[in-house]
Image (cartoon, rainbow, N blue to C red; front, side, top):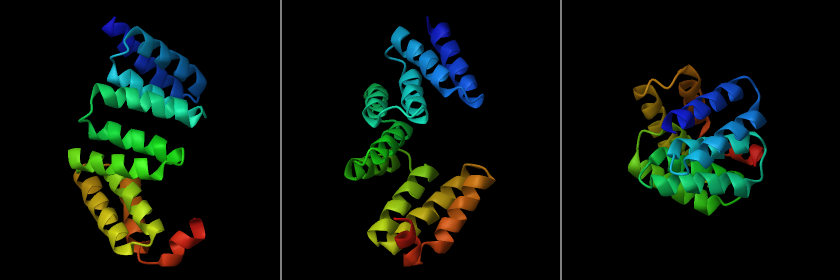
Length: 168
């Protein structure tokens, strides 16, 4: 049973890499049905549902199921926050992003998300602080050139208020 769930998760990830997201959702949904206590399956389901364009409430529900299984997992708080933000629940998203950083301060993507949030609120010093912390975390984690360069650019432009006005 555990081998089958792992195999279905791996298969779903391979399908996503091949651009077959809807098929991936079916595979990972099967894994989640076989073992509803599989955090990996529930988390993958949430992400793949979002990638497939599913209604936000379905993505959030799957992300919540994953988080219920591991409430002290910072990555899962980040994923739920991302789904909530996508659905327009900014306050809920911010609360989960903050909780994610309490649990795992090294989440560079969470720092970037909160940096964006603070910038749009007009709190440019808060935005810079999150981008700086995110950049430091990305470098320490060897997150890859793309993540590091993106955070460098965000940090460099965080003090330009019109950057936020032109996007929002």
